[in-house]
Image 1 (tube, rainbow, N blue to C red):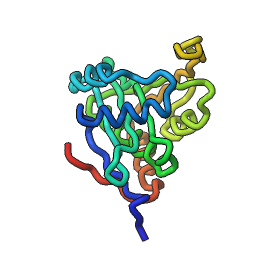
Image 2 (image 1 turned 90 degrees about the vertical axis):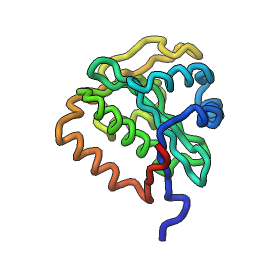
Image 3 (image 1 turned 60 degrees about the vertical axis):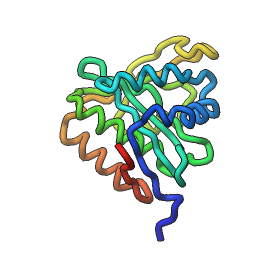
Image 4 (image 1 turned 135 degrees about the vertical axis):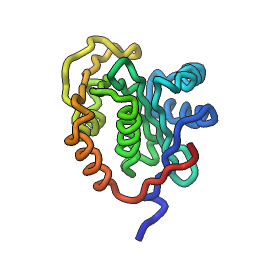
Length: 178
């Protein structure tokens, strides 16, 4: 039996979502983005891919990427602490990958704290592999960032991987208003 716990709605991020997103940021990041940073990102729709996830009609997470030449660069993926372990991060990663693929990118990249093994595990699931270290990358504590890359994202093998991940996420995912 499907419960509301397993039903997530994804939507394209809009300005009206920023307040809820910032609330999540303050709970999961030591140095969250400002409102103006989000508004700047959202003004660049032609080179940005951002989504929010709703659970029980509340924003439960968000994520996005910027398009730089032929690469997608994930800028953030965050899930409210109360809704973690519902597959929201996986759903957001699927949406980000598919959104970036529409821009004909050939690879995806990101930085993640070297101490954040949980996030690294998520990224490995999507085919990312460590490629280097950015020393002192995080301004709050000068922690190093692990640089990870996912190559050949236009190949059929990558699409098969995304489909496999999607099938393994419990519950349902719907697309809300564009």
